[in-house]
Length: 305
Image (cartoon, one colour):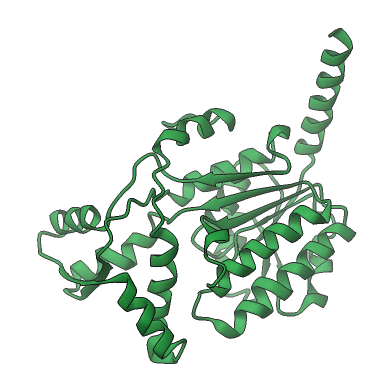
């Protein structure tokens, strides 16, 4: 027992030393989730580098203190220079389901190239932000690719942590709040499904805390908020805050599937396709309230933080 305890102490000391000397590369730093990861990482004192295609668009990250470096997942040759001196990668990037041209180029070919470059650079940890229920929706191209990248990352030999995410609270602003305020119709399905939305600030905490905890290496975690919401509850709350009624159009999920099959990803049908993709994925009941507190305990995060 004494030898075992000494070995564990040495392992934890070595892990802590690596953490204190860890530099981060954030992929998708300008996105809704990525910017929260960048901000919190800088606040915690990590050296942060962000791979960007548009320096002007990402200038706010530089003002926060992050280093910007040009890189494009659609151009694999630009990736290896971004990893020089980097210890860990956090990939919070994703394409829109309707960006059919970008899907294979970025979310498959590009991320495979990122994994290969990470292996060559001897990256100590790769944190990948995936989506809930991916294995159940392999008929949706984006989900098929996310699931495939999960598999490739597990096979790579790189120490990894995968987070399967539910919806973001921030996404509800565009989906519900703005349409109510601007008196625009809200398209919802006729399914009363609970979705445990989560704040991107909280997701960022989990991503960064995983770098400090050796027990999260080579593990997959499903993240969701402590409360499950149905669309009618969210709409009702928006109506109360806005002081006006919402225009709600309820459409059967089966009809949305049929419309998507007919119109595919034509330009004027992209919004329908986007909604369909996430309506299908989130249509699987996922109330994380029972397991959320266990996750907070595992990651040593206070629920009140």
